[in-house]
Image 1 (spheres, rainbow, N blue to C red):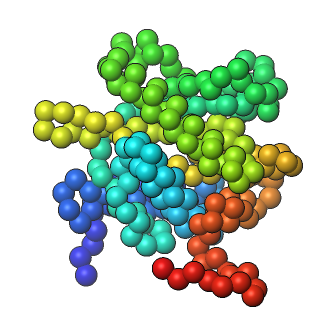
Image 2 (tube, rainbow, N blue to C red; image 1 turned 180 degrees about the vertical axis):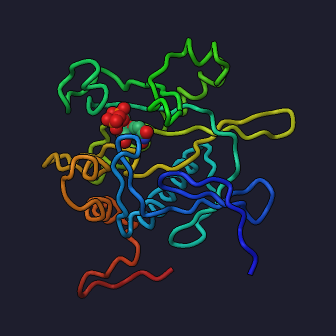
Length: 253
Ligand code: UDP
């Protein structure tokens, strides 16, 4: 059996060379890290849930015309994606104050923001992903002005889509992080949503109870992370091997 070529090993995913040029296999690990990897644990089943949830969101985005790197899910832990050049920014969209913005600006967690607020952090673990302004992004050439216009519009479309999907299942999308990839096609380049969209990179609160259903459960030791992510998957109807409710017919496709 031939060994696959590993391209990159991150904190939550490993990337392998894909079967065709321009493709990559994303393997979702069970590892959870927080506080710049100071806290680390292996949480059984997390990778499977994030693989399936990310597929669900990426397919939904494609359906409303938001381009993504996603091609297809290969198995429980892997998905095939288009290879792209990752713009070195974490694009954060916030609807309610939580986490770093609450600390930085002294806004109580849970306060609704007057409008969605988009922030950019420079992707550099050694520096702790510092917040940067568009001035830094332009001056250091991380993205052009046209890229920034496109990134803002993509981020707000993803926010509208995800907010609606979660609202429909009783979950408040407090904030999330996305990464953007550049794909070159001849003389042109296109920006796409890359990496993953999962409860690892969102803050999700139950609308009625305020219960946290995201990685803060791990960061703040609030209980079982697998239970929280399973609840999100169950509500969205994508729970792997969903046991059928007793007495109910099961759709087979
Ligand atoms: N986030 C992420 N990866 C990071 C930093 C943040 O996915 O490296 C997500 C985080 O889960 C939250 C949002 O981005 O949904 C905003 O995070 P924040 O800036 O509040 O940082 P935190 O409090 O998580 O350190």
